[in-house]
Image (cartoon, rainbow, N blue to C red; front, side):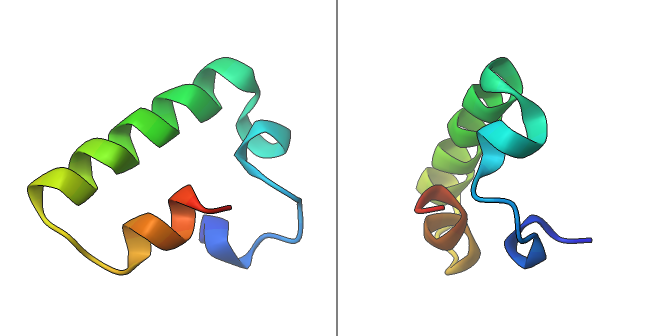
Length: 45
């Protein structure tokens, strides 16, 4: 199930603090390299 479809309120609830930080870092890097609407949407969750 894609993260944007989850009913849980954020990545910390799904992954925990450390992995949520890693996810945010990765999404920020991916957005910088190749902009796509998915990345800001995920970062704003």
